[in-house]
Image 1 (cartoon, rainbow, N blue to C red):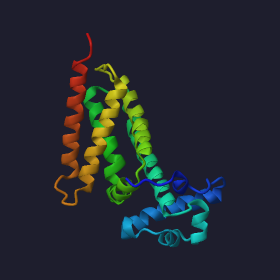
Image 2: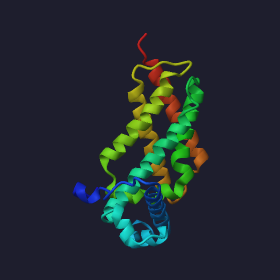
Image 3: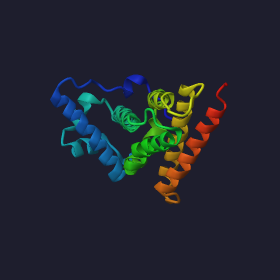
Image 4: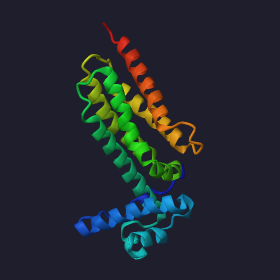
Length: 213
């Protein structure tokens, strides 16, 4: 990961009006489109501004340079992932263990695999500029939703739901990222889903067995 002075990576200003928010949203979407079209190394502020239909000067009102734009795109991408996981976890409260494991895996697949091109496009920016604190914060947020599901499980109890949830988030995210980055397509999504479900279910069953009597 490349280290940069924080002042160079922060947005120049935050949008406070509807028009400004729409401009920033257009810049984020344009950044993803440029990543998909030409790749990370060829992403420039000029290309992003052109794709968004604004001037480079307008882009610089919000982002002082390419690095600041990329960092903001990463932040928004991680937030979208967490929000997607949250939606997937909403209907899992009170489910039995087998259904819970399936639902959690489906929530993670929906968050990353269903937008596989975007996930692949974000791989290199995350590797180079991905702020460790941002990634940890996103993982902790996602783990909060998973922990809530574990606490409400109808046929199992656990000693430390928050730790279990965080490890599940880390394991599922790592497996999905590895599979998504694999251009050979040696593992299709249904096979990956089956393996992930077996992993999560086996882990939770073992954790349940370790619960103090």
